[in-house]
View 1: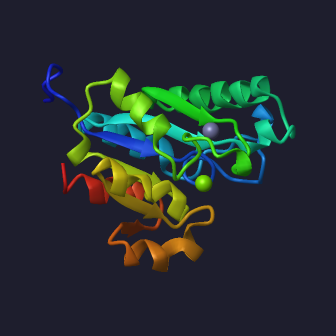
View 2: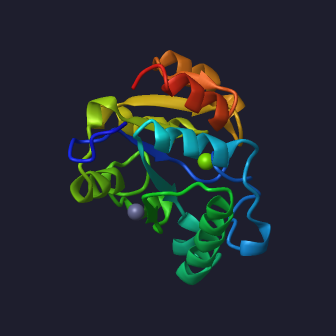
Length: 184
Ligand SMILES: [Mg+2]
Ligand SMILES: [Zn+2]
């Protein structure tokens, strides 16, 4: 049982390679493939009281590989597939800028995380940054939360660096969710 009036811990989730397969610049709803166990993991995180946010770098928009509308259609398909499995997200935040734009929202920047924190009652010390790259985890240092690397997507080659920054490392989001349930 969770107290709805109290601040809740949050999971700041990367999208590509963490929730869904990452073919590179994915912007086609027909190619959205949930990684195994992701829906079940999100359900168990929700039951444990975590807010679930997606924070995603989509430089393909700024680089002109695909329009914002294609990102949004892809996002709707992701949420449809999650919904079909009984899982849900609380909000999604996207950086559309190019890597050289110097924006504050591209991870490892924390502007999108802070937008979520401003909109929801987040218990940051009990929250987690989760992803398959170090830049997904780095915001945890500045935000004062914890970090978990998943070995899906590009995660396997970031595992040593994640361990060096004292992040947890899990095989995938399902294994990660099981680990996090010990910490809440
Ligand atoms: Mg990723
Ligand atoms: Zn940005």
